[in-house]
Length: 222
Image (cartoon, rainbow, N blue to C red; front, side, top):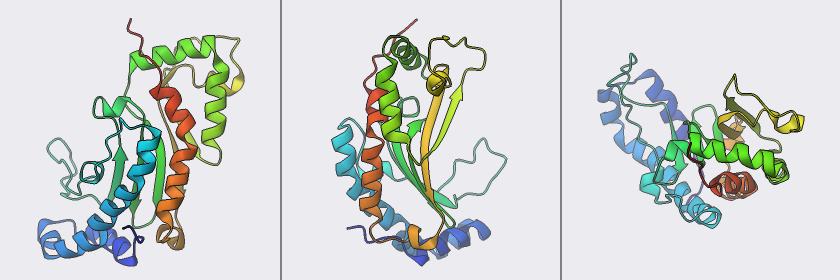
Protein backbone atom coordinates (compact mmCIF):
# COMPACT_ATOMS: atom_id res chain seq x y z
CA UNK A 1 0.00 0.00 0.00
CA UNK A 2 1.33 3.42 -0.96
CA UNK A 3 1.64 5.68 2.08
CA UNK A 4 3.50 8.54 0.40
CA UNK A 5 7.05 9.44 -0.46
CA UNK A 6 9.30 10.61 2.38
CA UNK A 7 12.17 13.01 2.89
CA UNK A 8 14.42 9.98 2.43
CA UNK A 9 13.13 9.73 -1.14
CA UNK A 10 14.06 13.31 -1.96
CA UNK A 11 17.38 13.07 -0.14
CA UNK A 12 18.35 9.98 -2.14
CA UNK A 13 17.80 11.76 -5.46
CA UNK A 14 19.87 14.69 -4.25
CA UNK A 15 22.62 12.37 -3.00
CA UNK A 16 22.86 10.38 -6.23
CA UNK A 17 23.13 13.61 -8.21
CA UNK A 18 26.31 14.56 -6.35
CA UNK A 19 27.63 11.02 -5.91
CA UNK A 20 26.77 9.49 -9.25
CA UNK A 21 29.01 6.43 -9.18
CA UNK A 22 28.65 2.70 -8.65
CA UNK A 23 30.49 2.66 -5.35
CA UNK A 24 28.04 5.11 -3.75
CA UNK A 25 25.01 3.36 -5.23
CA UNK A 26 26.12 -0.08 -4.10
CA UNK A 27 26.82 1.19 -0.59
CA UNK A 28 23.35 2.78 -0.44
CA UNK A 29 21.35 0.16 -2.33
CA UNK A 30 19.09 -0.52 0.67
CA UNK A 31 18.32 3.19 0.90
CA UNK A 32 17.33 3.20 -2.78
CA UNK A 33 15.10 0.12 -2.43
CA UNK A 34 13.42 1.39 0.73
CA UNK A 35 12.91 5.06 -0.11
CA UNK A 36 12.61 5.08 -3.90
CA UNK A 37 11.93 1.74 -5.56
CA UNK A 38 9.35 0.38 -3.11
CA UNK A 39 7.15 3.51 -2.91
CA UNK A 40 7.22 3.82 -6.70
CA UNK A 41 6.08 0.20 -7.07
CA UNK A 42 3.38 0.75 -4.43
CA UNK A 43 2.16 3.91 -6.17
CA UNK A 44 2.09 2.17 -9.55
CA UNK A 45 0.01 -0.64 -8.04
CA UNK A 46 -2.53 1.82 -6.63
CA UNK A 47 -2.78 3.76 -9.89
CA UNK A 48 -3.20 0.61 -11.99
CA UNK A 49 -6.92 0.19 -11.23
CA UNK A 50 -7.78 3.70 -12.42
CA UNK A 51 -5.55 3.22 -15.47
CA UNK A 52 -7.27 -0.08 -16.30
CA UNK A 53 -10.67 1.60 -16.16
CA UNK A 54 -9.47 4.17 -18.70
CA UNK A 55 -7.92 1.60 -21.04
CA UNK A 56 -7.43 -2.07 -20.14
CA UNK A 57 -4.88 -2.35 -22.98
CA UNK A 58 -2.36 -0.24 -21.06
CA UNK A 59 0.53 -2.13 -19.45
CA UNK A 60 -0.19 -1.84 -15.72
CA UNK A 61 2.16 -4.29 -14.02
CA UNK A 62 4.15 -2.21 -11.51
CA UNK A 63 7.48 -3.88 -12.30
CA UNK A 64 6.99 -2.94 -15.96
CA UNK A 65 5.63 0.54 -15.26
CA UNK A 66 8.40 1.77 -12.94
CA UNK A 67 11.55 2.97 -14.67
CA UNK A 68 15.05 1.74 -13.97
CA UNK A 69 17.46 4.07 -12.23
CA UNK A 70 20.31 2.89 -14.45
CA UNK A 71 20.97 5.11 -17.46
CA UNK A 72 21.79 3.78 -20.92
CA UNK A 73 25.16 5.46 -21.46
CA UNK A 74 26.24 3.58 -24.59
CA UNK A 75 25.56 6.49 -26.96
CA UNK A 76 25.64 9.39 -24.50
CA UNK A 77 28.41 11.86 -23.76
CA UNK A 78 27.17 11.94 -20.17
CA UNK A 79 28.56 8.76 -18.62
CA UNK A 80 26.80 9.16 -15.26
CA UNK A 81 25.50 5.64 -14.58
CA UNK A 82 22.34 6.61 -12.66
CA UNK A 83 19.38 8.93 -13.04
CA UNK A 84 18.63 11.47 -10.34
CA UNK A 85 14.91 11.14 -11.07
CA UNK A 86 12.54 8.27 -11.91
CA UNK A 87 9.11 7.76 -13.36
CA UNK A 88 6.09 5.51 -13.66
CA UNK A 89 4.76 5.04 -17.19
CA UNK A 90 1.59 3.31 -18.35
CA UNK A 91 1.69 2.60 -22.09
CA UNK A 92 0.35 0.12 -24.58
CA UNK A 93 2.83 -2.64 -25.27
CA UNK A 94 3.06 -1.85 -28.98
CA UNK A 95 4.57 1.44 -30.18
CA UNK A 96 4.53 2.87 -26.67
CA UNK A 97 6.24 6.11 -27.68
CA UNK A 98 3.81 6.78 -30.51
CA UNK A 99 0.56 6.10 -28.69
CA UNK A 100 -0.85 8.04 -25.71
CA UNK A 101 0.08 6.98 -22.20
CA UNK A 102 0.12 8.22 -18.62
CA UNK A 103 3.12 9.03 -16.46
CA UNK A 104 4.30 10.26 -13.06
CA UNK A 105 7.85 11.49 -12.45
CA UNK A 106 9.71 12.48 -9.31
CA UNK A 107 13.08 14.01 -8.39
CA UNK A 108 14.35 15.83 -5.31
CA UNK A 109 12.68 19.11 -6.33
CA UNK A 110 9.47 18.27 -8.17
CA UNK A 111 6.72 15.71 -8.73
CA UNK A 112 4.95 15.73 -12.07
CA UNK A 113 2.16 13.84 -13.82
CA UNK A 114 0.63 13.87 -17.25
CA UNK A 115 -0.54 12.17 -20.40
CA UNK A 116 0.58 12.17 -24.01
CA UNK A 117 3.07 10.69 -26.45
CA UNK A 118 6.43 11.84 -27.79
CA UNK A 119 7.25 9.89 -30.96
CA UNK A 120 5.91 10.46 -34.46
CA UNK A 121 2.95 8.30 -35.48
CA UNK A 122 1.98 9.52 -38.93
CA UNK A 123 -0.99 7.16 -39.50
CA UNK A 124 -2.52 8.17 -36.16
CA UNK A 125 -2.00 11.88 -36.84
CA UNK A 126 -3.50 11.47 -40.31
CA UNK A 127 -6.62 10.05 -38.66
CA UNK A 128 -6.59 12.97 -36.21
CA UNK A 129 -6.49 15.55 -39.02
CA UNK A 130 -9.35 13.85 -40.86
CA UNK A 131 -11.38 13.88 -37.65
CA UNK A 132 -10.70 17.60 -37.10
CA UNK A 133 -11.93 18.34 -40.61
CA UNK A 134 -15.02 16.14 -40.25
CA UNK A 135 -16.07 16.47 -36.58
CA UNK A 136 -13.92 19.02 -34.70
CA UNK A 137 -16.40 19.27 -31.83
CA UNK A 138 -15.46 15.85 -30.48
CA UNK A 139 -11.83 16.92 -30.12
CA UNK A 140 -12.76 20.34 -28.70
CA UNK A 141 -14.88 18.77 -25.97
CA UNK A 142 -12.18 16.24 -25.07
CA UNK A 143 -9.51 18.95 -24.89
CA UNK A 144 -11.68 21.26 -22.77
CA UNK A 145 -12.52 18.46 -20.32
CA UNK A 146 -8.94 17.25 -19.96
CA UNK A 147 -6.55 20.18 -20.09
CA UNK A 148 -7.81 22.72 -17.55
CA UNK A 149 -5.05 23.90 -15.21
CA UNK A 150 -2.37 21.78 -16.91
CA UNK A 151 0.59 22.74 -19.06
CA UNK A 152 -0.14 21.86 -22.70
CA UNK A 153 2.83 21.18 -24.98
CA UNK A 154 2.24 20.55 -28.68
CA UNK A 155 4.94 19.54 -31.18
CA UNK A 156 3.76 20.24 -34.73
CA UNK A 157 4.86 20.08 -38.36
CA UNK A 158 5.97 23.60 -39.25
CA UNK A 159 5.07 23.71 -42.94
CA UNK A 160 1.73 21.93 -42.98
CA UNK A 161 -1.20 23.95 -44.30
CA UNK A 162 -4.02 24.34 -41.78
CA UNK A 163 -7.66 24.55 -42.99
CA UNK A 164 -9.02 28.08 -42.52
CA UNK A 165 -12.39 26.82 -41.26
CA UNK A 166 -10.87 25.44 -38.04
CA UNK A 167 -11.31 27.50 -34.91
CA UNK A 168 -8.29 29.27 -33.47
CA UNK A 169 -8.36 27.03 -30.39
CA UNK A 170 -7.57 23.91 -32.39
CA UNK A 171 -5.50 25.20 -35.32
CA UNK A 172 -2.27 24.44 -33.47
CA UNK A 173 -3.46 20.84 -33.02
CA UNK A 174 -4.02 20.19 -36.73
CA UNK A 175 -0.34 19.71 -37.79
CA UNK A 176 0.26 17.63 -34.65
CA UNK A 177 3.31 15.38 -34.27
CA UNK A 178 3.12 14.72 -30.51
CA UNK A 179 1.81 16.35 -27.33
CA UNK A 180 1.59 16.08 -23.58
CA UNK A 181 -0.45 17.50 -20.72
CA UNK A 182 1.58 18.09 -17.58
CA UNK A 183 0.92 19.05 -13.97
CA UNK A 184 3.52 19.61 -11.29
CA UNK A 185 4.09 20.06 -7.56
CA UNK A 186 7.30 21.67 -6.31
CA UNK A 187 6.39 22.16 -2.67
CA UNK A 188 7.61 19.46 -0.30
CA UNK A 189 4.22 19.08 1.39
CA UNK A 190 2.58 18.37 -1.97
CA UNK A 191 5.29 15.95 -3.03
CA UNK A 192 5.11 14.02 0.25
CA UNK A 193 1.31 14.06 0.52
CA UNK A 194 0.08 10.73 1.94
CA UNK A 195 -3.06 11.09 -0.22
CA UNK A 196 -1.07 11.51 -3.42
CA UNK A 197 -2.35 8.27 -4.98
CA UNK A 198 -5.98 9.40 -4.77
CA UNK A 199 -5.10 12.80 -6.22
CA UNK A 200 -3.26 11.26 -9.16
CA UNK A 201 -6.10 8.81 -9.81
CA UNK A 202 -8.40 11.82 -10.12
CA UNK A 203 -5.99 13.62 -12.44
CA UNK A 204 -5.67 10.55 -14.67
CA UNK A 205 -9.45 10.24 -14.91
CA UNK A 206 -9.74 13.96 -15.69
CA UNK A 207 -7.39 13.53 -18.66
CA UNK A 208 -9.27 10.46 -19.89
CA UNK A 209 -11.45 12.19 -22.54
CA UNK A 210 -8.40 13.37 -24.50
CA UNK A 211 -6.64 10.05 -23.99
CA UNK A 212 -9.66 8.13 -25.25
CA UNK A 213 -10.05 10.46 -28.21
CA UNK A 214 -6.57 9.59 -29.49
CA UNK A 215 -6.68 5.96 -28.39
CA UNK A 216 -9.97 5.55 -30.26
CA UNK A 217 -8.69 6.80 -33.61
CA UNK A 218 -8.14 4.25 -36.37
CA UNK A 219 -4.74 4.95 -37.98
CA UNK A 220 -4.89 5.92 -41.67
CA UNK A 221 -2.01 4.74 -43.84
CA UNK A 222 -0.90 6.72 -46.89
